[in-house]
Image (cartoon, rainbow, N blue to C red):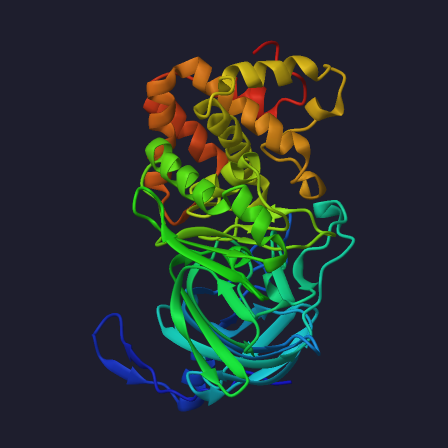
Length: 475
């Protein structure tokens, strides 16, 4: 729709020899300034999702003010992003699928915008210089679209999932832009504030800390804030007739668990609230300090989904979680949420660690050791099985959530624990979490850290377990 605004400036140049200032014409200076402005890239170059995310800026904060009508499935409102320009920008993109966009402003001034696929291309009235903080507000309205049939998650629907009484919102890996404009890649983390208005017979549960609610006639606005950096795919606003349980873990961490009334009796029977508290506290002993302000869970009745997701501070469960599922998702608060992947090819750093954590919780509660469990699984999978015929350090886009990424990732960590011993192994994990706290990391960084902490050459070990497309010789 728009073009870059022409800028007329006078540039003062210093003559190299005499130090005498000379003044160019306004037209010449404008051309020179314009030549230094460039559009931000329409993707971050992730090998699996090259069009996700955008270049030229770093989002620091999202402030969403939204209204949702369950009867019509309409979501409307504004998203205000505070960002820092990392390049001299003539324009920049946000990721957004669907919706009608009614207005865009940059620093309070109307900006031109156009839609190209999932790209919302924004041209501000004035260029943005590198190092400049700026604020963009997008007003939009429409019905969120559930992603269905994707081979990435084996055909399971994800993103904004409609339920009988509201919504179940799980966005891994690339569905955040189906409900809010974003720089939709885990490399660009930001803090969040959610103010969501719904009919007063519904409630909203989101990430972070509960700020409060305010009734206005037959509508109520719920406010939540996540003050620690969060990847966009971990953001959620879940709408329903929740029963809320607010308490603290035995170790004192604030805990909020939301349960669908249809599952409330069963959830109490399985002690979901107590289980969450016990697991969270145990992980702090093994992995280090809990990285966020609260823990908890969201337990919904979504029979056609059957998945769980490590949404930050409050994992999503489409069913009542058992200890295996809860231990897996809560370990992600360290491995995946606080320490996030730099690109999706490193997904084993999330899922392999969480699978190993399932085995570690079982060991803690009287089950076999992680080594015995891993060795049994290792021996049960034939050498000819396709399970072994992929590199889990770079599994490919459509295999990023394959069983091998989870299971072989867990086997790798169990083997590493056996190789270096408990004291060194758990020190590796704690240093990993501490050094990459609220940041992003890669497989190569983990390998180098393991070698540094252990003082041992582990290149061959990791080559065999993470990269070689064949069954290792032994475990």
